[in-house]
Image 1 (cartoon, rainbow, N blue to C red):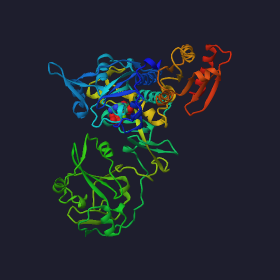
Image 2 (image 1 turned 180 degrees about the horizontal axis):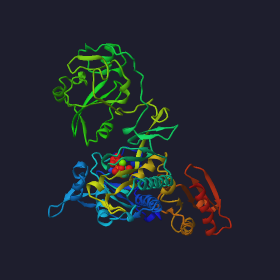
Image 3 (image 1 turned 45 degrees about the vertical axis):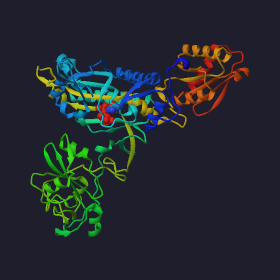
Image 4 (image 1 turned 30 degrees about the horizontal axis):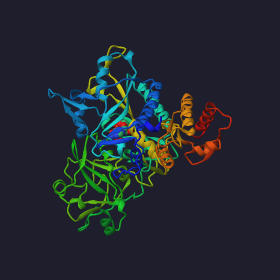
Length: 575
Ligand code: ATP
Ligand code: MG
């Protein structure tokens, strides 16, 4: 590609509204432009990278035995109502109506559409398993679109869906997909981890997310270095503690805690460790109110409560008036004892071994101390409820867990029969009985992968492409002016390198050498080949690697073909 007629509007200034380095660089290097919040144009360079990633994903999907299809973006509300997700998706779904006032959604995902296709076409066990995939735009009215195409409202996803007659068959495909994902992320040069993940709105029984490690990423995971346990922080398990267990229960006492609102105040006043002042929260769920208890030093992980209850929502009761009406006390004094009968109590697993602890008395300015399970609080369910924290140990092997920030680039799900049940997707088994398909689904955020790669690898000069993502294998920087020998050689080398299958970018623009070098670095050229009048006079080309190592290529007695071959060798070695 020749830069003189390539649409590459690079920016000198850092765009003011971008926070994340990958977002800044995508704007500066002319990959994308914003149309409106969460909606972007891809310019030639950005589109080229997008296509490269798409191709890697496509190859690996084909290798894994998935067949490519294309499903519609405009999807009838009817199917979403059948599955129950028309309401569940809520305001994140873009909804529209046609001229006859029939309702539609812009597809945020495609489980409904594909289950509808398959239920109409596949009726026999002989047709299973089947794995289909597409690479298509998705629409989600994200509450906070941000960081450019990292979290946009229109984005490109690869989504695959599999249909099975047995769990074993799903397991096999799931594993194959996992392996294909591993190859994709390796080929893109990403530093990644797969972790146990919440199933969220997709549903199902088991899921894993693929996370690109990045300190600025919005997701958090825990990883055990000594075994293969790793998890999204929202569902992470931990080795249960019994640090505060004493054997003999003491007498239950009501104590005055006037004006004390915080765990710290109560713990200091009573002279006990803060972890023994158990905190109570009241949540509103689809099935009514529940009380959730964690130790004084801990925080609740709402996702864990939601998962455990299988409820769609769990909102903490946060108004003083509501909490007073429910418990009889203000926030600082609420507890699990004496709550209305129909409020079930869930306590964090760590609390199970706790004895003689303190809770709010449901009476303003009072707490109860020496509280013990069974004797004072009956029917408590102990669940994994608190957030994991630094110092927590692996639930599998007991080693200390590591915490990392990251970017979610893919997720795979064992869906089970969620969609085949709700949408009546059935096949006939060997005995002629009808059974629901067992399903899996598998997503990769193709457009998010661009900022993910950039975020992981950028350097002080700009984008630093890795692996199969690099849009060009080298920048051929031609100095001098049109008509000079340097331009003639540049043109000839560009053609020869193309013959040899190297995609190089020739900078033949009439701008200063410094401008050309900066742009080549900014857009992430792995190496620069400099063809200048001065070098030609002394019979050399200069080759500079991304890390700044320079070497000269002697032109003496070589024809263009030979020079191109030599350069090709350097590109392959350095790129
Ligand atoms: P997130 O938690 O980041 O909102 P998600 O879990 O809702 O994502 P999935 O339904 O798992 O997303 O979609 C598959 C992949 O699509 C994600 O792993 C992510 O890489 C990508 N993706 C999801 N939402 C967006 C978005 N708004 N912009 C860009 N990529 C996205
Ligand atoms: Mg996800």
